[in-house]
Amino acid sequence: MMNLLTVFGVLLCALQCYSQCSPQVRGVNQSARQTILNKHNQLRAKVANGQESNRQGRLPQASNMLQL
Image (cartoon, rainbow, N blue to C red; front, side, top):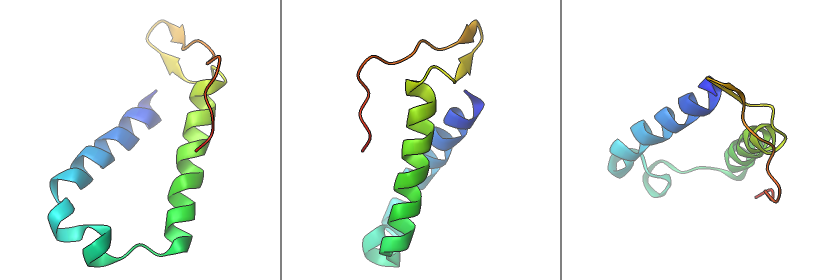
């Protein structure tokens, strides 16, 4: 759960400075996009498979969570 919160924290921070470092300004190449997508799907799969924990134990397994 902490990894997931870290990712969302980074995303929120990124949104604050988006105007200065947006992909249109800084550029994100295809390799970086693929790396981001792979990490996103890896974290998403962890949640979908019920491998992510919370305070009470583990989150339930997703019934229909598709990959992006």
